[in-house]
Image (cartoon, rainbow, N blue to C red):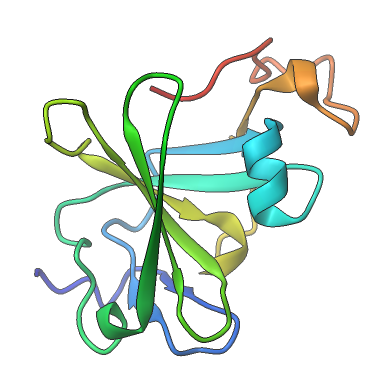
Length: 149
């Protein structure tokens, strides 16, 4: 894995899982209002930062050794891999496996785990039809529904 030591880190609540992300800035930021994201975040929405998976996955030991996996099928036919800390349960990363067995070239890193990413001004709201909190109507970044590919 290439050295990303200058990039921001993602860290779980207890600190057992910590590793740098693959780029200084995310490719995209999503604020998702779907039921699955509300459940996994135990909140009104979930925040995900999208990064290239190259140079980031799999994470180095000992972070890798402290991760556990839960999978589920998605509406699109993909398999969603949800990686979380074995000790504190913090959801860290989502990875999509395509029906042909290949993986998408990006990862979704859960927003609450970041050290240093506080600016959500470029975030795109998705699954807004199921939102339980107000979504800015004048936001040109709001989508009526849907999740990132």
